[in-house]
Length: 397
Ligand code: AMP
Ligand code: MG
Image 1 (cartoon, rainbow, N blue to C red):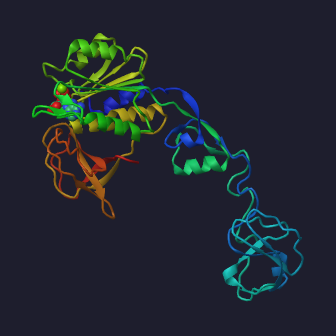
Image 2 (image 1 turned 90 degrees about the vertical axis):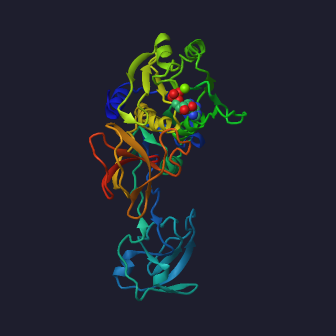
């Protein structure tokens, strides 16, 4: 049986872009930018006052002048009418353009002022103080973003600053989502004692929504019926991604792996040495797309999505994989298997540590409620002691 790192490597090696498209800036948040972004002009575009204060000629200051007459008031977005002369200053607002001739700004708080004069007795002054010079952040044409970059709030602000109305982004994959199982009913249908409400659909749709806003183009629930599985999955062969939950274990009604191979999906791996999620099955579609058949237990479904689908999608989008880091574990944990065990943890505290979140096995519908990361209890490790450093994979980076 391969381990989860090997499985991830197999997937990453098969990663491919789903194409590119142009979208308006209002659609770009959370998407992956594929074009290089350059500064359309110098930034700042003019010598910008970074303070409310008074703009003077530094040569005046050097020659010993400490009292200045106010020639004009300059607001952000405006230009002065008059040129500054010896012994004169402009009253200037934060964000306004420092006019030609002026080359230092003394902060308002440092001077005594009246309507027409300022007295700068105690102030200090250096050339270009409190001025962000034209082009000191970026020069026109400078590359600000190299491709493959997630449009986060900073990127969104930057794109707006440089006037990008449209940007080129990675296309989202066409995902066909299926859940399986005779006992599964929709959450809003009456459920007999022997029936289970379909939670995986909602887990998976939420995970996709969180992964760059992917909305599966289709969803269907299928009974454990070979023929129905066959026809329904065959009809989805044109997808970029087929994701299934349930029916991949060793039970007599676990038809999913067999049916996938029947319809021409080439198996990459079946079973990974992890707990939960061991029965996960993965294969390549005839069109180069990917099939992920995840185990049906809710927490297994969540773990295998994060470990495999998320890593695969990141690689497809040209992003680096989910980050991992190490934090001390708050309480001891025993090892139950020889597998890599993933367990729900909450990163908390300052400085941070990991609290274990109670979970009664992978079938627990609480799904590690309030967890914000998966902890890893490595295959080779014995029991974990309080304070042991543990690798964790945060849900959100
Ligand atoms: P399976 O992987 O099909 O053997 O299912 C394993 C366990 O997960 C069973 O107890 C199922 O009832 C449960 N299960 C399967 N699919 C779902 C689903 N969509 N929502 C909630 N529980 C599920
Ligand atoms: Mg089942």
